[in-house]
Image (cartoon, rainbow, N blue to C red; front, side, top):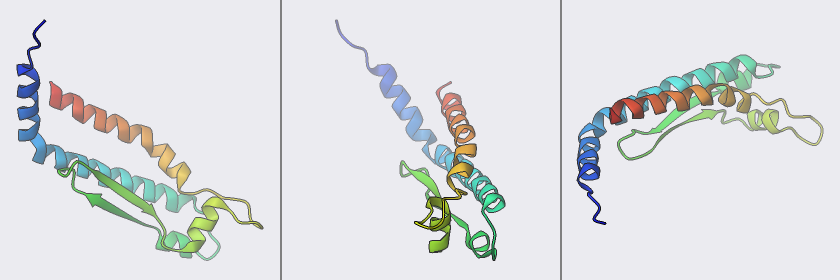
Length: 120
């Protein structure tokens, strides 16, 4: 039975034409969601001196047009990692993973919605 791939080719061409808009949309959604994760993490981190909270940051990498985009949320301080995973003397007090988990489902839903709008 012959396979008609013309619809797949038309879809691929349409997607390629929408690539800049899709990239911007995904980048914006990623930045906004990353900012929410960062705000939640800063609000939940255990504070002794405030140093970890004050040094927490968010960096977005990629632009969506290259096929990838992401946000890195955390702290450059070793103390931030040690709070998250604990030490031999101190149990973990996670502040990053729960913040990410709280936003992950909504982020995936946003991306699925964008993909669904594109395919209509």
